[in-house]
Length: 74
Image 1: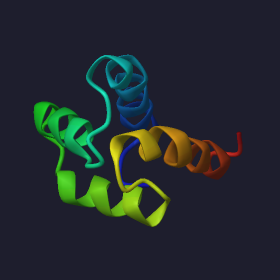
Image 2: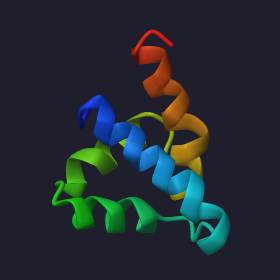
Image 3: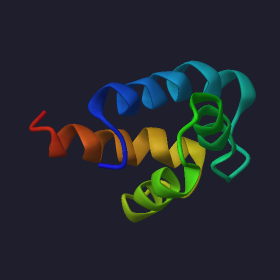
């Protein structure tokens, strides 16, 4: 995982709240904004997202959250 569980959960929570308001522009715009706002290196997060089916914000929420949960034993 590119981040500790608490930060991963925070990223997914942010997407869950913000994505319906701002929509997906088929990039990782919201993930980038969140990471930069948290002082987190975006490249590592983006690489993990891409490897786990998240090439844009809506796919991160749809695919990556599920893969993260599975990796945690959920």
